[in-house]
Image (cartoon, rainbow, N blue to C red; front, side):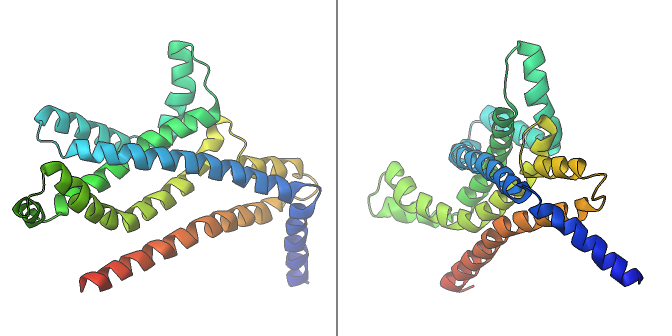
Length: 237
């Protein structure tokens, strides 16, 4: 009997997913999550590449400021940054900013810092003889950078950036705290609406949300591993 009651309770909890438009609402919430993540990732990759190049400059002041920015973005929790962007900017400067805009701003700033450090590491890992070989065949410094260094840097960055993209997608779950109606927020609304009739609704709702994040992130993780293994095989490691 206890097993039957448990099975009935689980079945009842999963029935909430197909009650009304709950499943469609969760899919729409996932769409909002993916949209914010994609916009943030795009800006992060572009700005991060420029930031990484800046971090390799010999100017001590630029390198110091870049390092301070990187460490600040790493140490400060993303949730705190979201609150600062959404509530702090509004109160301090009287600027009205939406939760989506605040989320894109924060994740872009954070992603730019992380991507910049990856770019810096990739650039500095290029052997010096690559530069010397380019000069030996008469290439200018600009040609060496664009035709020799950049292609090798991008090749090394691909698997690393995939891992960063996965992290950024997972971290978007925090945007629920600034009022964005994304997949986690929709899930909370569904649970609250069925709190009295289906008390165990949270089991099914959060299980589905977990599965949604898994479906989005798992292929990226597999792709990163595949690219990394192929690069190692190509380089003879």
